[in-house]
Amino acid sequence: MGRVGRHGGGEPPAGEPHFGLVVLDMAGTTVADDGLVERAFAGAARVLGAGTGTPAHHRMLEHVRATMGESKISVFRHLADGDEELARHANAAFEREYGELVAQGHCAPVPGAREAVEELCAAGRTVVLTTGFARATQDAILDALGWRALVALTLCPADTGPAGRGRPYPDLVLAALLRTGAVDDVRRVAVAGDTAYDMRTGVRAGAGAVVGVLTGAHGARELRGAGASAVLDSVAGLPALLNGLETDGPQPGGPGSDERQSGGAGTGRPEPGGSGPGGPVTPS
Image (cartoon, rainbow, N blue to C red; front, side, top):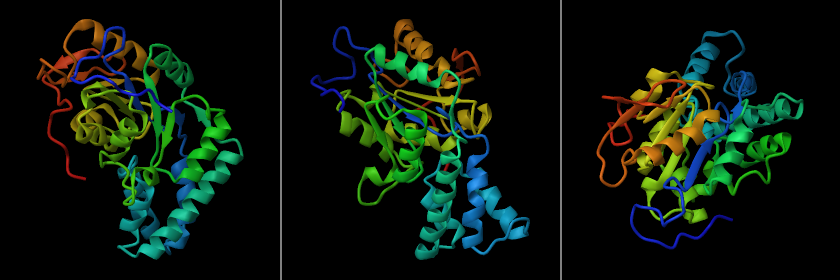
């Protein structure tokens, strides 16, 4: 579905944008969460033997909040203490309840998200939407928003290979590059998300721009600490940020530059001394 990359090296051919591939998270980044993950967790908690309001439920919910952005099956494997069958039952209950909430109309785009995606595509960038949810849930969200034809490709952890690894592994970003062939160098990939796990994924994949947004689970400090090269109020500001990076000179992490940048919230302007894509990755 994506364009075929034909050129070597880290610089784009004449007329093509440097950041030719943009990998975007869904819930909390392009899709408003509004507490749906926590509401859907109630069904999974019952499968795990933790009734609403119990200390066990509270502990599990705290873990869910702390690991927003991680592949959901990975979260439930932890909560099930490694019991694979129990984890899969809990994950299925979660996905079922989330899907029901979406079907009931509890699903909306982040303001300006669709327009941002359309602007990115109009600038010649290939856009891929990724999620930590299962394919059925991702498809339900896409259908509810009318986004089936919006982007070149959508990916969930199961699309990355036999291991089905989601965030914080680099697999979703690398799968986006391999599936689309949109660029010839990972440094020409931009990654955007609302969680520290999104940032770690971008860092580990070697993306040239790793951008945090403040419409979801984590704040600017957490995003920068996990490697964000810029932080924006929302994904609506991403097209302008990428245009500015391409206009202003060497790309963060790109050829000829070892500068590490951290953008101010709502501005995307570089701030010296931040932890950028080449910085340390917090262990997950």
